[in-house]
Amino acid sequence: MAPKGAQYRMTVHLDTSFLIRALSHGTAEDAALRVWLRGRVAVDISAVAWTEFLCGPVEEQHLQLAPRIVGKRVGFSSEDAPLATELYDSGGRRRGSLADCMIAATAIRCGAHLATSNPADFRRYLASGLALAPTLFS
Image 1 (tube, rainbow, N blue to C red):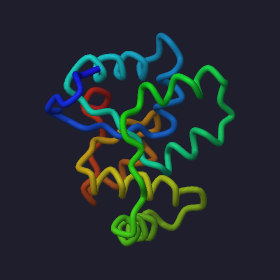
Image 2: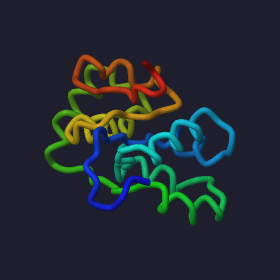
Image 3: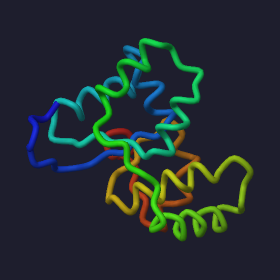
């Protein structure tokens, strides 16, 4: 990890799918996460994605490991609600997509790149200012 107090050059928010796969050794997500943790990249997660992760199913060892990997758990705020609503409406109000809209809105507000294993779920939000993590999708 970057030293405490270090200036970060980038912030990444992990999506639930990314965090789950990153906890499996040898995956592309594991490799990307290791690069970020060694570099000057802040690795955070929205409280919405964190909640999805905790809902599992998740192994006990991963419940112990994940909090040591993730920096901040960034709350969904009243500032995020209008953008999440706009993303939901523009995405066709698809069943099951509201949490993704909330995760995307939080990342946009924080100026973070979103790391996800399901980029197709989030590409529709690029025009609204979402940036996908460049290590995976550049």
